Image (cartoon, rainbow, N blue to C red; front, top):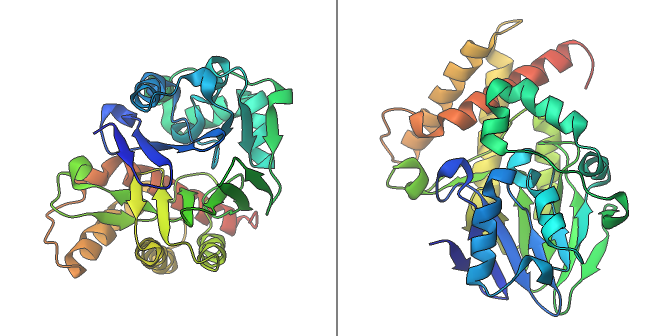
Length: 312
């Protein structure tokens, strides 16, 4: 199932990130103008083109491309997509816009997190012409026909993160702000599981909770996750994300001074296992979430180190 129709002219496209289905999604909104939300990594470019083709859309038909933030699983293919979409305008957070024009720091930061596997995982980055990039202020709007898309700056996962609210579906395109929705087709578990994402380098639990509070005040009816698909009602996603952040805050308070990465990784795995079991799912291990637990543990460690150094 490469394309999912969510109604209101909104379609999810499976990007087959990591070469796996049900991991990452882009969203196409069909209206008087065509808007694409997220592009995935450069390695997902062909999957994105196939999904657009299933919807009878060619890249050159796109009017707007919108990014929630510039972590490469969301935006690494943005330059490729803009090259294929000559009339499209790119919309991003002001802190993100400069990295789309000059991705050099983005490349070095990604290699610092993923090491020698970065290029293999995400593919090459292509810069975008500055005149084609719009830096969206907090509370700004884009009308593409019936749909008005509103942009909200939402730090906590990344300082350059924004969520996008749609007036027609009353849905919130949440990027990585309102957690990850893990489908059984991805995990191999027999249930849907949700947990926040705390990957480096800007995770801040208090800021993340404040951003979620602000987004919930919009009263969205559903959450459109980049990872993956729709949670409806939206309260379900806010609940599992807040619960996970509270577990992480408790973990941080319990850790000894100067904890190391393996300690946090092991503790986070246990949190996931216990959280699933509390919900009635007797999982044996957290192996299906191993990549995200690795990244989340790194993000938590960076947060602790910044806090100790007075850099928050």
